[in-house]
Length: 485
Image (cartoon, rainbow, N blue to C red; front, side, top):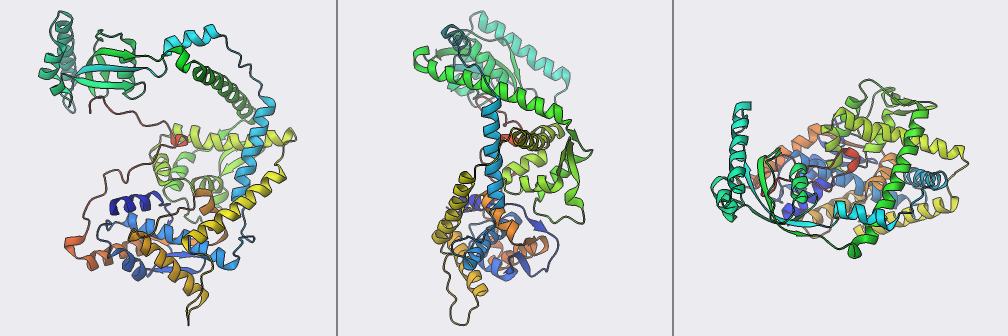
């Protein structure tokens, strides 16, 4: 359970570290301070939670969100005074682009049964195969000669299999992965579950057929398909037709957006990708002078600035931002900078067609947002906070938030995240800050309080906490794992 709470806290982390501020304050939000001593008191008793800077930062981030929510609720329990511009802008732009798409993109989605059946037979959607394989791996750091030697052995084994030797026996003798003891048996798997070349080779085989030698990043494979399960057209045909029609629409949309971008003469500024990576590491860092107004993308009639990219990154999940930091320059250009420029160009295009936001829809979104803030504050116990005798309203808020976090850390309360745009709405209305130096002081003090026997009962995985589903805007999805790994 404590490992789960740690994962949830880290999943809520939105890096907001700043180097300004006193060493006794971990975080500030709307005039409230989270002191080093208070953060230490919250974390030190929970020996099952790792004593790591990432944990302290996650705690500080959650404290900020809840302190801001409690402050807004105390100022106006209906949240009618809260500036909802980030939420409204997001909804307005989505609506305008949707109306533009529906009005200018006309696609003939009529497909003949013959065309649908022909492609269905070729792609076999929903198909599964039961297969075996033999995996040979060159040694780490292998020379070309060593790789050639391993491939030659794979070719020799393939010749022996085709001459009649037992595939299973050779797999037990030569295969280097976990399936060797079972004669290379991989069981059933569907399309896309194996790494690309392995997947393609497997589904090209009929039962009883053996592949040529297949090279993947994991080594050299010989594959035999034992069974193939292909759903009938009558079972999936209509769904497949719908997918083909959706592809036609997406292709038309892509061509339209490409044309809009071409007319806009989009140009990426030199060094823009490095700036995006820096922002992804710390999207709430304060920028000096006119840095926020620097153009990272220019197009006819407008630009995408540092501030706009920062606003885009702030509500994103930590895993997404981590992918941005590690992405190639081309991925950042294609999936962030160009997409932001395309969005602005499409809004301009919509306006040129006389398309504007629906006031009724904006009013509905506004009311739903206020209801969300109120219901969340009520559920968290942050609505109607009453000061105890001798307490100020500010002290009562800090006490309530501290008690809430204590309950979460003890697994007595559920973590209720505000969500990216909702948290951004509060953070744009009130000043927030997290101090790096103080974060490290908390780690030091927690270590001292717990003693050596209770510190770090389990380590963080090398690449950080378990990742949520990949956000496609950060780049391509991870390559599926090796067969039989």
